[in-house]
Every structure is written in C-alpha cells, then in structure tokens.
Image (tube, rainbow, N blue to C red; front, top):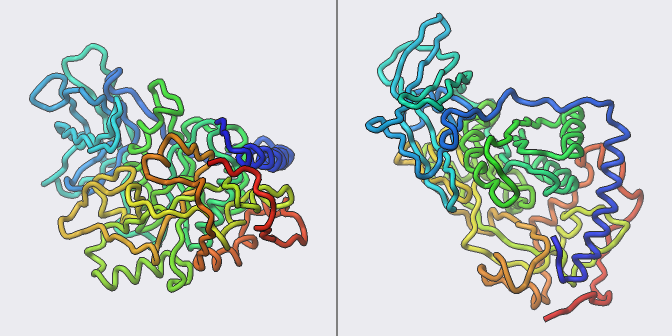
Length: 447
C-alpha cells in the first residue's frame, strides 16, 4: 500500500520497526509449537458450484442439520431441478435417515461469484434423534463428491452472556501483529470472553502470535478456513459472510452474544456502563425486554490515524497502538452508511457483514444504539483523499483541524497497558510517559 501522505510513510517505518521487534520476540520464544486449531476444512460437494464447511444441529427457522456452505450465485439447486442434493443423517445408535436438502441462499451486501448458503437437512417431526454426522451428495451429476461432516449439537444455553469476537478471515500479512495485540487487549478490557480467528492463509508470525496468546491463557479459537477456490485479497470477502454463519453457530458454545468486527475496529461503550459490554447489554434488554433484543446496531466513527496533527503515531519511543491516542482522537466523523453489530447468536438466522438480515423469531429486533452509548471506532490507514471509501462517505481528513475528545475512550486508556499480553508488555518502553505535543511542526498539510 503506497500513500502520498508523508506522515503515513513515516508512521509505516516506525510501525515496521516495532513489528520487527515483536516478530523477533515470537521467533526467539518459539519452540516450534503450533497453535491449537479446530478440526475443520472446506470440502467440495459439486465442483465449481457448491462447497461445504461445517454442520450444526439447530433450530434456525427450520429444525434440522444446517450445513454452512458457499454456492455459486447462478447455480440452480432447487429440489425440482437437477442436480438435487440429498443428505443422510447418521445417528448415535448407528441408524441413517435420508432427507431431501433445502437450499437456503443468503442475501449478500456485495456482488460476489459465490454466496453463502445453508444446506438444511430438515428434521421436523423426528423425535429423539441424536445426529453425529451428515453425508451430502448430489444426484444426476458425474462430477459430484460425497461429503461427510461431523454434526455439532449446540447447547441449549451459553455459559456466559458476553461476548465472543468473530473476526473476518485473516489472509497473509494484511494484518499487523500489533493490531491483533491491541484488539484482544481492548476487548478483554470490555469483558469479552472468547475470540474466533479464521485462518484463510495466516503468516507464520501470526500463527506464532496466536500460539503465544493461547499459551498465556487467552481463549482464542483458531478455525482453519482456506477456501477451495482461487482467491486473493480482493475477493476474500467471498468467505467473510460464510464465516459469520459459522461463527454465529460456533460462538454459542461460549457466549450468548457475539460481536462482528474487524481488527481495525474497536468498540467504545459510554462511561455510564463502566466500559463493560455485558452491563450495557443487560441495560438494553431491561429496557426492551430480553426476548425482543436480536442485535445492537453500532455506528462507525472513522479515524485516519496517520493524520498530520497526530504526534503520538510518529514517535519511535511509543508502542504503535491506537490506544496511544485514546485520550484525544482526530478526524472523527459519524458515518451512517457503515454499521457493525453485536448479536444474540440464537436469534440470528442470517447475518451479513454490516447487519443481521434475518432473525429467527419475528418479535426479535435490531436495536440502533446512540453513539453516546456505544460506537465503533474504525481506524483507517492510508486515507487516500481523492478516492476510495473516504470520498464516497463524504469524509475529508485534510481539513480536520480540531481534536475530538472521547471521555469513554480516555477511561479505557487508563487501564489498557496492564492488560497487554506478556509477549507485548515485555517490549513496552519502561518509565516513559505518553505525551501529546500538538505544537510540533506539521509534517504534511497537503490540501
């Protein structure tokens, strides 16, 4: 990524220095151990058309076995046309139940060649069944595969209310390690319990970081997610919504609510709730009725963190964390177009990237949060002033000459460093106070 902004280039050099130090720390401390991973993988059901990933016994609009899938957008898979799909549900007592498959394609926000879908083996009216595996196959096609997946039975209730973090699939070196360190620390500070990372094709350094975090006791579930179709950074979103379908199910083993955010998005609750998401959710449920809350919808507040007024990000003696500017954010803008959400996992029948598309019960609803109560701080790098999302959103960071004081974020910042993972805390410069020097020369004031 190349930027014309001189601050961005300087910032990148400093961040690369710190990134190298962390990578070296991870390499020196690694004994070759690999992170714990789930047993999961994409499988081909119908070449170039249908791929399946995981299976869950759930009541998500239809009671049955729900198979998380990717289906080519123009594929005709209805049971009235060829090829039809059928499933065989194997039970704990060794029996096999043959069922026709209901293909439920999900609505997508963006145009992709593949869309997420649930292949549903309906079990309405079947009493006392305990599925252990499901076999899927298509009829009338010579290029079909027979695929078997284990069936995971979801718990009736989750052990904790909040929250699991569901993060988009990680590909290559597109995510900096320090962003991950700050991400887990920030959400632990908010009371998050678990993290679900999806390994599309993680770097070795990222895998070492996950292993180290797991060894330190962080509850991080690593899910292998390498797509069986050609992909690159521009089309990995093909798998992002399928990931959300899987995580909405998988997170139910951990918590009642899950949070849909990326590594560059940090939620900030208002000071009223003591920087605790569970407290905030309880308050919303009390006001609306616990059974009515399906999701909490959050506005994005966008920050271009290499902005020329931001001194903290161009100091070599400060860890390259976004929290260094939690006291004083710059270039803030409320963005009504891009939203993220916290959702009750059992309520979700279809989740897209920016909103829950379908709730399982009609009475459940999306609760739009006031930005003073709950907001997502979205930290963008390399803000290209003439092109891209910033232009389409009507954001011009060049003329942002005011400081945005965020009392809620400031309260979080006072406790942040004590919760850093040890592998990062050991690198923190000792005894240095964070200073904010706003009278320093502006490096770049391009208009």
